[in-house]
Image (cartoon, rainbow, N blue to C red):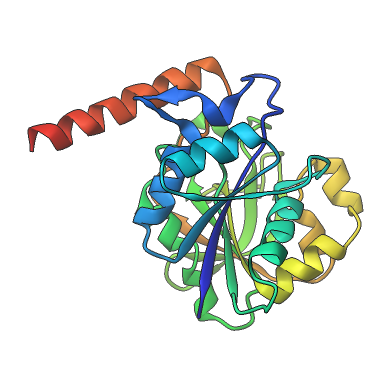
Length: 250
């Protein structure tokens, strides 16, 4: 099964302007994400962007970039345009969407997203992690997976919500927004209009569930740092600087 890893990158962040090109230990953030994707060993890695400067930076560091339109409403739309341009003969069977603001994500975490595709009934695969901090259980910025456990380390997703759910005793799971799509599922997904619950919760993945598509989530052990603010950027710099220092010592 051929796999393509696509990293959508746009410059329009309001909280951290120019985010993809933010310097982290001498390289742009988007390049660090591409390096983590390549280290996963899953397949070809391409950055999909609407900005010439991002494409140039990516290529200068030895990675592929493809230009996409600037008016996409979501990363899913951007990666589908990129897929269509990169693979017009439809040889790619699986697409992994790696967010462009995860410079410290572990390659093992990226690899884990393909595990649910062991089941041919799964259309879209994603990741989750058990919530351990009490404040995160009620934080609307921490998206929760409501799912039915599958033997092993997996949930069949029944709903995604910003609310605290499900009610009652038992674990709650934080959704990590990294996705793998079967090609036909991605094509169908981007053809659908925004759904009622998607608009209400502001969660794109609900469009797939409302359309009857199946999403399974592999449960991993840690949440990768998403860089959305200057404080997040400093934390990413600290993490990667320490990792580089450890590698140099060893």
